[in-house]
Image: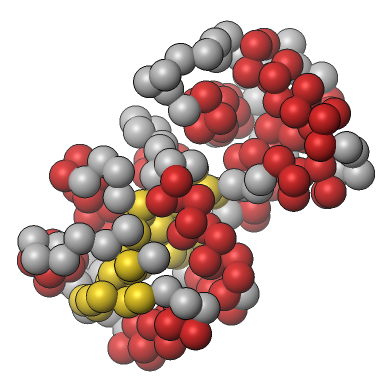
Amino acid sequence: MKVVIADDSMLIRDGLARLLAEAGCEVVATADNTATLMRKLDSVVPDAVIVDIKMPPTYTDEGLVAAQQLRSRHPSMGVLVLSQYLEVHYAMRLISSAPEHLGYLLKERVADVALLVDGLRRVIEGECVIDPTIVTTLMRRPRDPSPLAGLTARELEVLALMAEGRSNAAIAAKLSMSPKTLEAHVRQILQKLNLHQSPDDHRRVLAVLKYLRAAH
């Protein structure tokens, strides 16, 4: 996969580029600010972009704004936002309108290159990948019972793991159930959330978005 990296830290840019190259990815460009990132994307079309959430000049939410602009200009491009700190409100802001092809991970995950590459692959495929720490934080908050009131405790467990961007095989292994049982749970979740078969909608992503909005 072709990847562009945007981070103001040279150490992080170079480190990510080296890790991804060793994992078989092609880093086609890097940038140290969002303006440079946007210019480079005029001539380079990657499969995914990794962008730090806090970039020059204000170091507040430049990366988040850039991610939203990228989703508007390149709807099928995967965008993975990295953050040094646990900031649930930023994650929710990122995915609130169009969660497909988006991911939000804490920088501490970068040490596990397999997890990073898996996150990139998932956002490229159209999934929504949220850091497990954020999902756990949301689960601990009091929730409005709607629209998740009809889900069983097991189905909520499955949906939480879906929100982390895990595959069916990984969820089944985590919960010690057979793939067929897991698939049945997923079908029940989608039906209970009124996410019926549609060629235009990514139902798993929509289910995750409903879950995160209810938990926020």
